[in-house]
Length: 321
Image 1 (cartoon, rainbow, N blue to C red):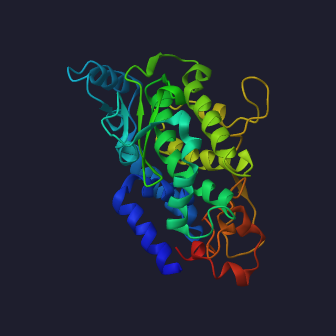
Image 2 (cartoon, helix red, strand yellow):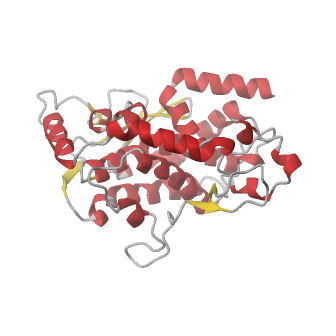
């Protein structure tokens, strides 16, 4: 079975490299446990040249939007720093040219194809392990959607209309392969984070509600998957001058005063075991991948690592990376 899972994952990577990359980011955005903090510093240093000023971002956006080929889909990677371009190569502004595109609002109608895709990659049973499988699928999807929303809101200072009714998703064998937002989805610039991030937050609410309706999965698991990826994206998009967008997005309460489902997606914890670094950067909520038979390796930032004995930790790839 392990060989079949490995072959399935290899096939996913070959057919849609950006999707595989997105899952890698969602599962291991925090560096390998044994070298976590050193690697994070090195990664942060390496991305410094990608940080653009708000003026440069505005100029680049205006240039792309004024392109004479505006009647054709515009690749969202053209707005992104180099560190995020690979995750946005299949995110577009404009009508889809792919016949496999579906209205995102119809996502729940494709439940069977989505679960079949995940069993091909991870194994398990599409019904018995539906919640864990959908949780993994969401990581692939958020790998497409989240970087676009953050690049628009943080670097371009604009909201991105990501409403499912105006968004097309390309599904290939049940896997999310590309996203198409409306040609005019980028709204005028704003200094108000509540306006700039409204499109992203509305999008996450809608998609998470659809996924939660497809299996008995707690929405907080899906919000944690989104938050884990957003935490990584924020590390790659620090503007010059710095802003308070991360503090706003990950605050304990939402603008309406309700508890924020994205609040502090990762926390610095003090582990009991010396095999883990201290502090250990852990997700607030586990993605429940361990529920899939044969998936014994936990994510590098999994909170369950904090509960394991040294003998069990020694068997985890996370501490050997």
